[in-house]
Length: 293
Image: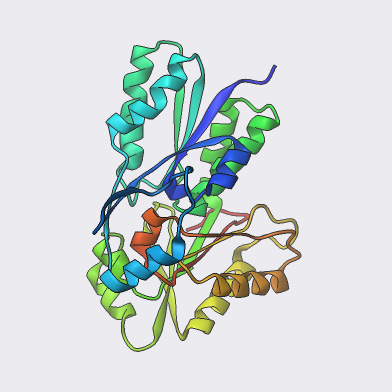
């Protein structure tokens, strides 16, 4: 008999409502603090107008976001455990947000309140599709009748294999959001230098190179894929972008020249992460055969 457990993640996982519904994953939204007021970073009741959102960022600059706090996690988790189900929660990197810590606190409180129930938190050390791919894989494993524990252990064992490479148009978005240092931001803002960034093994954003020009930055991402991706069968490959779909499609074409890929998952950045990377960001996510340094 298949173990019946819920899979949950936060909106940083970049799962659009169609992906979340198909995989039966519940998404808990972070909050964006815009000039017009608070807005959830995920809302499955209405479509996300990505172009309007990023046009607003282009006009106003960075905005703040608010993590999911303990009370919000309890509100999301409690109906599930009260109904007698366990939970696997796939969390964004503890290296860039306190969201994972809040989830751990809420899980501990609820497991005391509901003895016998299990809420397993996986710190993916990732964000965007680096996190979302683990949620999607967990859904596949649940469908294949893998237990919550074996699914969580697979994610823990493989999370350092997740490659997260990206480039941005303006590093000041990441700096003002507290994701990178001021020095890194200033260096990357010189002339037409385009930074290459990555999520490291500690779940933090670090520089991994720089090139001159937008096209060269996209080609550099494809080269990083060629260097780090398996030579044969590849798992889920995903691209996130901030209102620059043509650049994402160009990158996908370059990846297909490197490998025989069945598909490349492409989606616009959801507003929470998009607030930090800014308009014009393009990010690439895939598994490496070995752990990422």
